[in-house]
Amino acid sequence: MANRGGQTGRRNRHYGDSVGNTAVRNLQFIDISNMEEEPEYRASRKASGARRRVGEEDMPYRRKVEEYPSDRRIKRENQGRRRASAAAIARRRRRKRQRLLAGAFLVAGVIVVGGLLGTLLWKVVGRFRDADVLSGNTREERELIRENDTKKPLIKEEFLTVNPYSRPAEPLTEVRNIFVHYTANKNTSAEQNRSYFENLGITGERSASAHFVIGYEGEIIQCLPLDEIAYAVKTRNYDSISIECCFVDENGKFTDATYQSLLQLTAWLLREYKLTPNDVLRHYDVGGKKCPLYFVEHEDSWEQFRQDLTDYIMEE
Image (cartoon, rainbow, N blue to C red; front, side, top):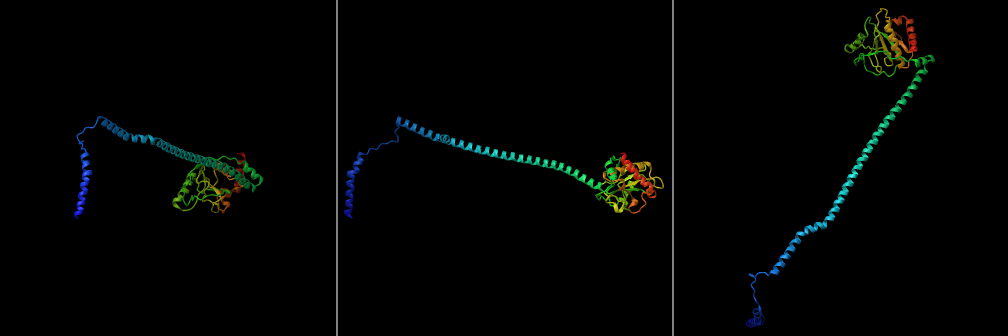
């Protein structure tokens, strides 16, 4: 241990003599705490710091300058995409409007063409129907139907209220005959008989009505539409039209005014339904009821009425 210590001491002394002392002798200590910087150094340092600060401040600007072209390109691309999208939307809307307009024109065209075809078809069917109707008649009767140009008489429409006793509102699908009746109520007017039919809807005492009532002064009142049935002839209500006539004479004979209105109204109905005077019947001809009384008891007067009806049509 002593030897080691001695060696160590010697080594230290040797280093101290050879290295340590020499370094201490040669080392010069300079106190720089109070030394002022040289002007040139301070100026260069200041300039370097300024350049560094300017550089750091300029970096964002330089980045903006460097990135600006790409941002502008992206902006142009976005604007282009927006314009393309707007143009596509506008094209779709324009095509939609065009389709709607085309559809509207197509529908209008179909309606117009359909209306024209329907009118033409109606006329053709009407001609065939007229031909079928006329085919069952004699040549004189066909000629009479063609010549019938009777104008519609003055008619006062006073339709009955819909009820189960005088106006059931059931459809009248065809007309094969015109029936003539009399009211069986002496000295009653057309208005009074129309009121009687109306009151049946309230009293319900019986079922009765007619399409027309002719007063003894010649006035004509329509009680029912021509496309609805009347309760007038039990077995023929669904294919006929009935006319009631007022009277003042005990025997049921019509006044001249009633008679003339009956001729005009019946002739017009014959024209409307392509019928002839032979298609005009008395209530008596179906069921045997004495109606109209005068024409039942005076057969020659009935035949004269039919002849007068033919003459009236031909004169018109």
